[in-house]
Length: 269
Figure 1 (tube, rainbow, N blue to C red):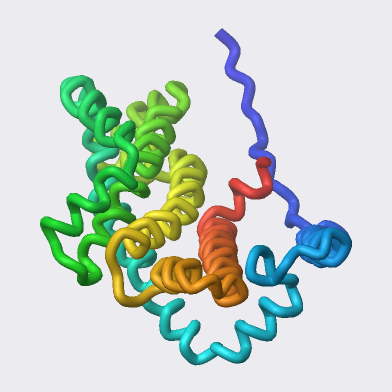
Figure 2: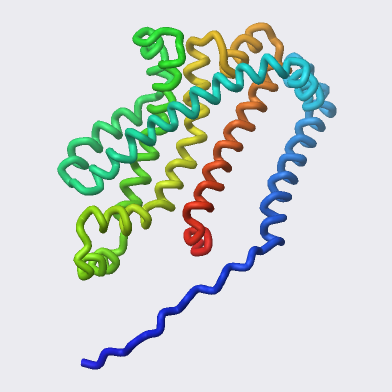
């Protein structure tokens, strides 16, 4: 048998594409400007009363008039969102690792996870309120329930996607199981794990708001409920705008973390 030696190919340094970076910023901004323009045009053309759908100018004015109050409520919702999201990671990722390594655990736990995930979380919110009261705890639990399943699912999928030839290579190098897992399987799974995290972070904001809708004395969800009850649509839309900003900001924070940790994954897309 003839063995042919191959010279390893060193990837060239990636030259930043400034045009792509500019488009990545300008295109979303253009979409936002178009959406705001359509919003303004709809309220003006159809003469929609402000107590039904306020125009963007009125919403921005209301946001600045109530800026201190809305920032306090934003911090409450942000705290619930981030704490619940982090707890879901701490519980979900290790559980997914165990499931990925054990078919028995998968057969035991997957039906239960699917059952819990299939229950509408709005139906659980009043029960959490009775069990845990009106504090921050039921909101955090609601966030965990919404984030948990996508994190587990994406982590299991990523860990099981490691190519068999890569696993065989590590075995031929006499790598211990823990080395194979931490240096090969985990890093191979990281792009898929981040897919789950990015899906989960938007659900985290939804979970916090659901909890605030059902029973709260603070938070942006509480502001929306109270504003709707008093027909103050401008304040309600201001809170909704802040929720959108929170969701987008948290999502892109994860995108930046992913790019810093996994630059090779971005290059291979």
